[in-house]
Image 1 (cartoon, rainbow, N blue to C red):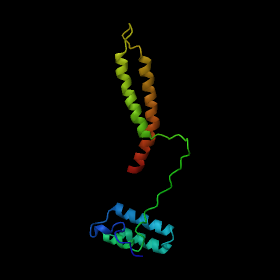
Image 2: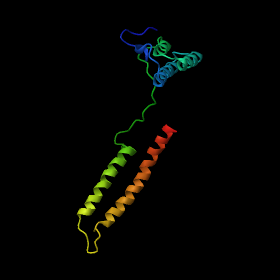
Image 3: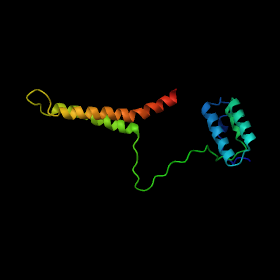
Image 4: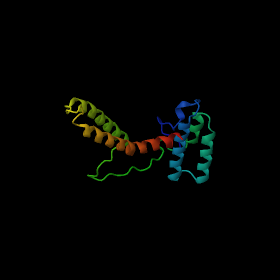
Length: 154
């Protein structure tokens, strides 16, 4: 199937440039979508994926998708649908950022407030409890962040 004028396949416009891993992944995503939509048979899909890994240039990759519709993009997993009134779950990184800012604000407040006759701040309990709360929050919110980072880098 010929491409409409003005549209190019995933890697067509870059000719003799070396194909990157991301270029190959994009072409494989397009091939997967074409296979799922019934445009490619299983053996043809397997053959094109093998050719994708063997491709050296962007022109080689473009040839693999030249007969597929130009608007075909890699399929993405469906996003969960939120119902009306359902609360949003904040991201762990944002929770940690806000908690760090609030925790950092507690310390100047503790030094500004009056001290008692024994030389201790009257809000020592505030600093103690916010430190404990902050440490627990870092453990709870930081663990998934660390796990994601380790999964990507190991």
